[in-house]
Amino acid sequence: MNLVLASQSPRRKELLEILGYPFTVIPSSIDETPLAGEDPETFVVRVAREKGMEVASRVSQSVVLSADTVVVIDNEILGKPLDQEDAVRMLRKLSGRDHWVYTAVTIINQAAHETLEGLERTRVWLVPLTDAQILDYIRRENVMDKAGAYAIQGYAAVYIPKIKGNYFNVMGLPLPLVHNLLCRTLS
Image (cartoon, rainbow, N blue to C red; front, side, top):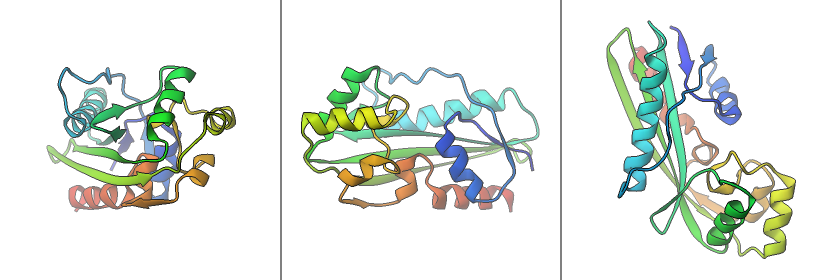
């Protein structure tokens, strides 16, 4: 099997390595802008699928794994911040509240002519944050490549008292779902 990870995320690469499959990384180059009126679940599933299809169009006889992760609060998609001001806005919005993290996964098995998809949801709580804490956090960690402007595996962990659901989902690759889908397509 030639497994291809259609992502440039270093976190997804690290997480996929845990499963022990050899793989190569080929990032996708699709536009990740939500369509007008698109709800968060539809958006994240569509983007994961389009990433996989775009990379699958460039390889052959491969199993392509793609994923997309968004943070959702008040039905608003919080993707990667545009700049520091946007990161501050996102963290203020999340402060003292709970929100959802959605990760959609697509696996395209070219040899079997099969596409499998799944969606994982995790509920995350953040403590109330002052503007000083938000700015300190942004100085400590590169938040520009993270949905919702935070990384649960980094310093933000001190502000997250609990989650309900899969921890790895919040990092960007829900390992139980990925393992299940890979086992199904490779059996």
